[in-house]
Length: 204
Length: 199
Image 1 (cartoon, chains in turn cyan, yellow):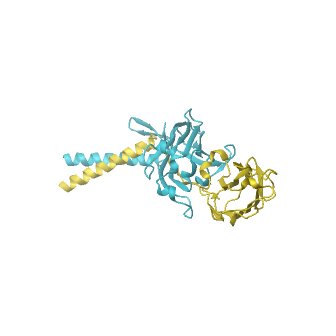
Image 2 (cartoon, chains in turn green, brown):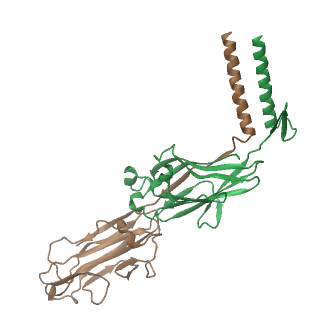
Image 3 (cartoon, each protein chain N blue to C red):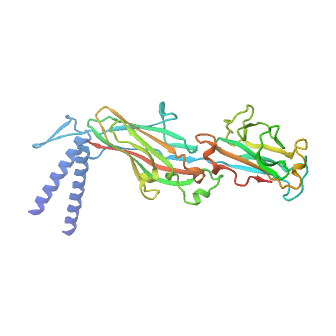
């Protein structure tokens, strides 16, 4: 008897799940409202796009596939922005995270003394951020400070958080990377690789 | 019997997780995630090597005697643009036991004669490499290669006299190099060649 009850329970649960699946993936095309008995569940379509752009002067931006800076010198400022568009049917809360860092010599033909001494560009690479979604700013913070720990493959920092984006609108995260003018010769010929810039959204 | 219970338990767990996942997606608990490509940020460096030498220290010299044994030159292999300037100082005696360190400026009052390579011009104590047009802002291109700096230095016999008799003199050539942009010379003492070319 109890086996029969359990089997019926499993069958009911399976049916419910497949109904969710069918509704979610639009195998069953009814509307955006799915009725399950007395419960009404509104389907929330979360979707967004993100585009990275680069500028030499902070005014005119062009699309970029990645952050790529070569032969920078102290005082150089590089302008980037990420345009995030909410293409879904629900307001979203978005965050931008820089994940995974590694240090290396910029040019193997150059002097590797600074790299061998354990110096990292993250100590003198200043991150600044403004955005159009909220009033939060970050100004001239060394990446190492933002990470707050070892600069390695599992390190991360949040470049922008709590970006509320309404349906059908775009918000922009403007950020700059500047090689500190105080960096001096101790940071010559170093390279910092950022593994991933992750833009993640959830329903608001 | 035990096997059936295990199978049923595993199936129940799977269904529960699947249901949670679907509900989470439906309600927007889980949203889209984008990742942008790897970013590389690299800082350049100054790569200059120098050649040249004075004659041996400690010997007695006379006016007109060449003090450069090997012409002074640099080779630029830097991957960034740079600027180069030269400071020449020497001991100038204007009366017996009245000798002071002086900066060479190619003035008529200078007792030293210096022959620079082409493209150097004087401004406020320093000889700037400026290629064709005199100035202080010229940028050496990356990896510009060899550059002659000084080919000859000697005390000019027409301007020196008995005031130098028995005096010890010193001539110093300092070559300074800095990155092309964003910083002023005054802030870049660390970019100086540490060796210089002491007399």
